[in-house]
Amino acid sequence: MFKSPFKILSKWYKKIEIEEHTKIALLNSGFTLFFNLLPFWAGILIVASLGQWKSWSTFYGAGEFYLYSTSLISSSYLIYHNNKVKTSDLSSFFSILSLILIVVISILYAAISVSGAAPEQLFIKWASIIAIVLAVPLFYYSQVIHNKKSPDIGERRRGEQGIIIDGIS
Image 1 (cartoon, rainbow, N blue to C red):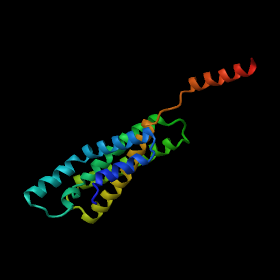
Image 2: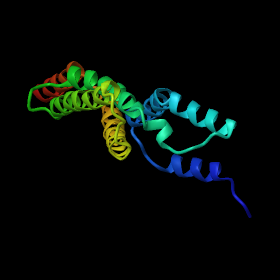
Image 3: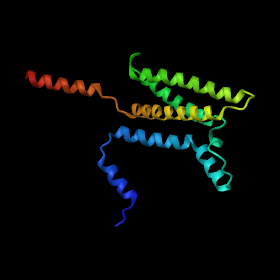
Image 4: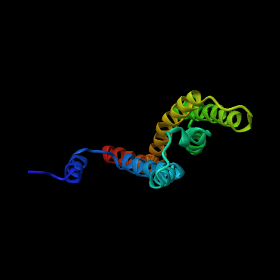
């Protein structure tokens, strides 16, 4: 008997125990990626519907993925920067990494945009792939950090005080 792939996936998804903030991070990341890459998706649909498909380089040849990556990483940077506790914190590392990637990717895009020479397509292809592959996990992890509830220290202390008072009396 044939089972719908959606039913199989929904049963599988229900079995997996994922923390709520991770689910929200997945949804936010998927939503943001879809709309961040909307020019890419629309371009594929338009080119496919017009029957004018030439190659994938149509979608990355002018450095478009550099822009998509920079957009994702800059959003990530703000979250990492605002959530770091101390300079040795992991968020601080990701904050610095995000800044470095923003600068490098922006310079690559600027070099393509302002140079009069025809850009090296193979370099653009791999640099674009590397940029987006680095940007997506950085963005996703920033969403996990952003959506994770911080512990209520006041409530925890009140509970500890209650235990101490019960122990004394």
